[in-house]
Amino acid sequence: MRKQFMALAFTAFILSSCAELLQVVQTIDSDRPLTETEVVSGLKEALKVGTDSAARRLSRINGYYGDEMIRILLPPEAAVITENIHRIPGGEKMLQDLIIRINRSAEDAAKEVTPIFVNAITRMTIRDGFNILKGDKNAATQYLKANTYEQLKNLYQPKIKTSLDKALVAGISTNESWETLTSQWNRLAGSMAGQIAGLNKVEVELESYLTQRALDGLFVKLALEESKIRTDPMARVNDILKRVFGSKEAAN
Image (cartoon, rainbow, N blue to C red; front, top):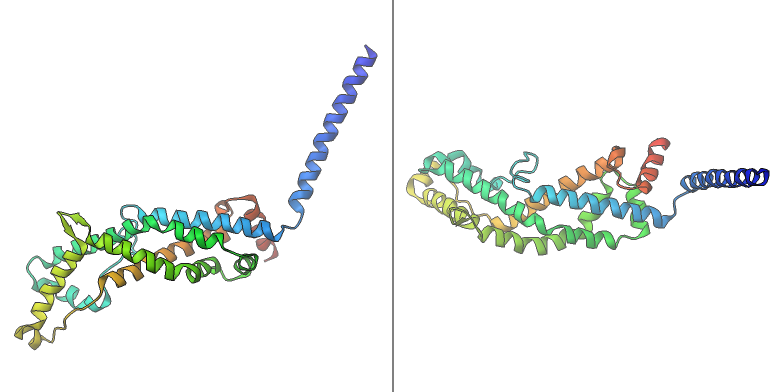
């Protein structure tokens, strides 16, 4: 009986010692400096989550239209239309429908953005990662913009065109609505009455304008996602990021 008791006591001691040793090892491991590979891996994961989150939000119904910060309105050159739209019968409703269709087009195109960002994130080097970590509050967004903008423009614009040509409401496409609105306006502006009133024709390449505005809105949302990671501990998607940005906050 005494031997059995001693054996049980010895086993309990060993198990207890192992548990304590594991806690010590884990503590040491969590306190050790992060390797360069770990830092970059953590940042890549954060950027993938951030870009996917931004893209998903923008691709929803009202992702653009429902957000005053990035809602796409008519080009500045078309201000003359919005200021005088009442001159065209039914013009105000036509204008509102057009703006809705434009934003729906951008929301539709946003569904295809994520793979482009993932490709750029995958190519991120160790130096890129540390430049982002030590850089400005929007350093990650600027990195993505510098490494994806042309590709996004080249690949995104055809999708925008497809969206513009797609029949969205009552069988009418965005391009058709824009053509109808601008042609009616330009006809008025080119008339004798329009010339006397000093009205100017509107000639804007809607496809290019919309692509630029849509991408601008996307990067605005990416900057907001990056800000969350840098300032909100709850937004840090893994332990590495918690340690990296936690240590930066402590240093500050």
